[in-house]
Image (cartoon, rainbow, N blue to C red; front, side, top):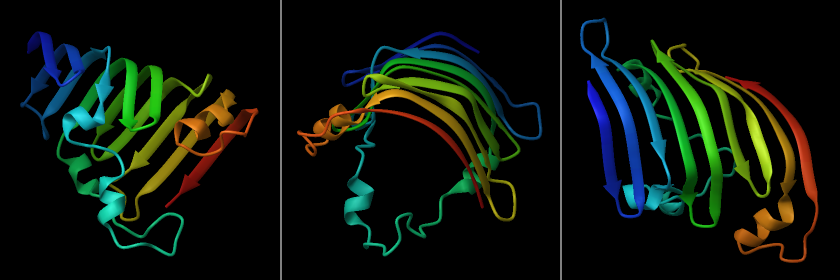
Length: 173
């Protein structure tokens, strides 16, 4: 058990409590984590680097296999709250909150919620990495997303204006 965990890397921080149980079929991590800032670049995970070095794909979603075997190595239950999440330059989410469950290679984020582009994205995600053919299900609702603001933050669409409300329901294998 780690009570009062406090870590800082660059400008990013992580705090909370965690327990690791080694007594089951797989190790199980239980955690409640918070962060005021979590920037992937601080963690050596700067967004876009892998995409820039990979061969171009003719598909919108490339055929690159995901390392889903790692999902079966550990079970986990966690609540995560991040005030500012910066996965890549120009992309910033605020007030991120999620509940994560991982068991036997099946991952769920239910619920997840974040503020992005002046709007809100909320929903649930399920990924069955244990299946012979992995399955993904995403249900999300987007409210008041200012897509002009999002595009401008990416260096495109400075003259684009408007907001987006959307309901997303995707399943796939």
